Length: 323
Ligand SMILES: NC(=O)c1ccc[n+]([C@@H]2O[C@H](COP(=O)([O-])OP(=O)(O)OC[C@H]3O[C@@H](n4cnc5c(N)ncnc54)[C@H](O)[C@@H]3O)[C@@H](O)[C@H]2O)c1
Image 1 (cartoon, rainbow, N blue to C red):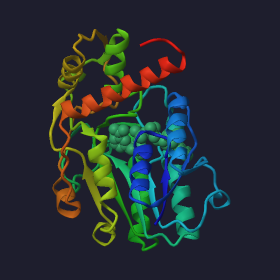
Image 2 (image 1 turned 45 degrees about the horizontal axis):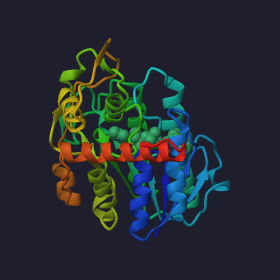
Image 3 (image 1 turned 90 degrees about the horizontal axis):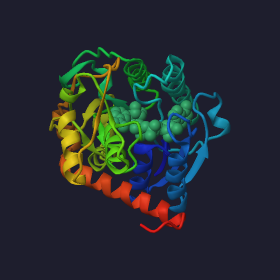
């Protein structure tokens, strides 16, 4: 199958592309290499994927006329591109354009120019609101511009499924971590602090925040399990995450234990849009996708630490600095 992965140079998109390629699909990808975080990390992800023979187009979904850039024989789309996070550096315009306008353009392109077998929207638990422990029937009450615009993006795609324009589903992901995690996310920052003796910015009250931290392997297992189950998934919104729950403090303790160090905390005022709790209810994913996340927190964080250390060793080697 010919599969398009949007946001292919990012954290989740790059892992997904790699897995789909290993499953012998013809994978192509697009990314605008946005400067939300260090672009060299995205270039490195793209370089690895290029090395596997995956073709990547530098393309911004906010621009119309995608038919001038993209092939028209695509069977499947996994839409990962987005303005993620709740950083104060991201403007409302960033969320509006990269989440809503970009998704609208992609849907328009798919509707007009493709005979699509299926469209998978990568959604988020952030659409639910502040205290999240619910199934997919729960009314969405987002508390951030990220959550609001991702909800709109999801509805754009699902409306195309409802209208019979193309079959689609949306997967609502919960706190993903692991190798290549975005540098603005918690485990990336904690590992960086532990290695470089920096202090970790702890937003007021966030020590007690609870999250279903889900390792990237479990997330990718869930995403690719849609293939072959298109008929049952069409029109569905499905939560994807581990049903285990951990506090931020447990996350900090895990990195400290595995790296045998104490991380200094730098107390900051509470962040607007930060959710109190996100615990995944995955009965639907278990039923429709036979989804069984299996990576425990220590095992998952260990994988991420090993990846960061090997990346640092490669950098030092390239600079001819002995490790
Ligand atoms: N990481 C998580 O914990 C998490 C949790 C829930 C949902 N998600 C969703 O997963 C998806 C991927 O997130 P991620 O953490 O990998 O983020 P990421 O920033 O690493 O990846 C997103 C990629 O999309 C690209 N992009 C952004 N705007 C674009 C545009 N207009 N045109 C083309 N490319 C564009 C970026 O350059 C980036 O490479 C997003 O849709 C996000 O909302 C992530």
